[in-house]
Picture (cartoon, rainbow, N blue to C red):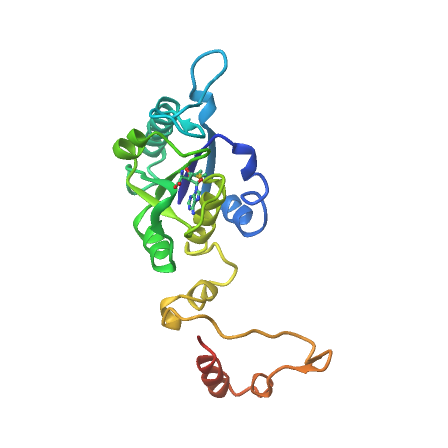
Length: 228
Ligand code: SAM
């Protein structure tokens, strides 16, 4: 799975995208994450990528031209490479704009995105957002990570990459672990049961007896009963 992230703040992706499970997934070639600076595609000496809104009002709006130029370059180069290595099934990327006004992200949507696409482009807005003409002409769907407003689309993009990546076979240590999680189909989209580890007693609090019994049937029934 290939992700291309378009942002005015590429430095914010250092850390979340370069550690732990996502780092291992990239090293294993299971996912690829490329971060592009929209400002590199802005013209003029000052590389201006945002401007005041038509009609007046507070805040700045991200300009269409640098975004579209960046998007076109990413797609052209991605396609050129796809043809060379014949790796990605589809040559058409799925273009997502992270937006508070988009469809709210839920686990079934994450699974669908992971299954349906090999290549996802994520556009991160900032300030008041992006020029509407970009959304109308170059975006396939808008996705929100919740009904609240953040300062930028960078955190939502990270949420999307992380949640989709863990659906890809081989990304998690144990294949089983993505299947039996909160909101997964195998748990009837419910919230998962509680977990415990050593020691058996911690500051007077005991691990439920059934989990120490070794009786797999009873453990499984207990866990089912704890789903919410
Ligand atoms: N003017 C916009 C509105 O009222 O809907 C909010 C703009 S917000 C301050 C700046 C950027 O953050 C947005 O363009 C979007 O990319 C991102 N953003 C903010 N909240 C988000 C959310 N809940 N989900 C996804 N992206 C979000």
